[in-house]
Image (cartoon, rainbow, N blue to C red; front, side):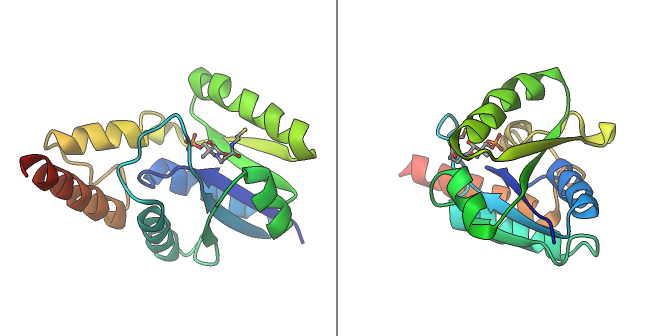
Length: 168
Ligand code: PNS
């Protein structure tokens, strides 16, 4: 049985992420989505909320209904060892993703020998990034065809909460 981990910050989980997890699930017997912290990003959603949203999105899709979603509390390589993962699966939308991902893949292999498998996502989602989704939503744009419903709801609620906090 081959196990893979699809890691990410998933702030929020997008249809591009769903596409990558679907592809991973076709390649591996078991897929675990790992919600991790990226110290170079300021998250809008809390880690537990990101886990909930990814769970709801994956459960609603028959191809990914058996995919587990867990919080990665520390290093990704330690989490992968705990779940018995043979590899990490990451999606590449283009050259910028490649430049961002390769150093992380090399570091993970340096640390424990963990391999990374890259899959190219559906070009229909090449422009879909969590950061852009948040920006569009923040200025009142419609994100319904960029993210699963649970993500759209979570982002809207978090933005409303953040605005209320600012007004205090
Ligand atoms: O979706 P992202 O932000 O590109 O994912 C990056 C992520 C969260 C997978 C990466 O930052 C990560 O693995 N964080 C966990 C801590 C860790 O292992 N850091 C060293 C990475 S080489």
